[in-house]
Length: 119
Image 1: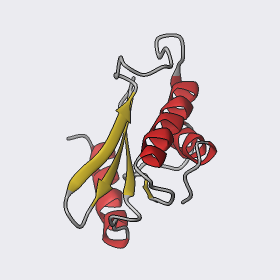
Image 2: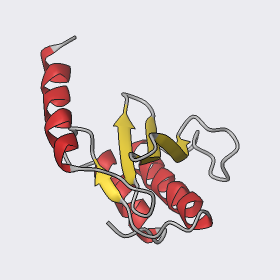
Image 3: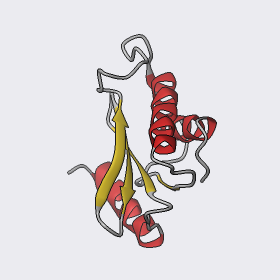
């Protein structure tokens, strides 16, 4: 593992001690690779993933091939918010997984807020 990834993992574990998702307020986890972005809603009490969305999903209404970077992340945030409201989830705990809160991570959060989720 590279030093940058080791430092991100340390930040992630430090944040994870403070964050905990429950059934009525699950944890919104973001993973960012170089090209794609993945988002999950996790109930930590049962250890189950309630819903997920990523830029690789082909069945989404938004054409991800035409969007890049921040635009793609914003749309993924709106998609996960729509899935959460279908399941009756209004509030979540945002877990940025050690990434800095800017760029694509911030775009996911903004898209989820626009979709109706509260942090």
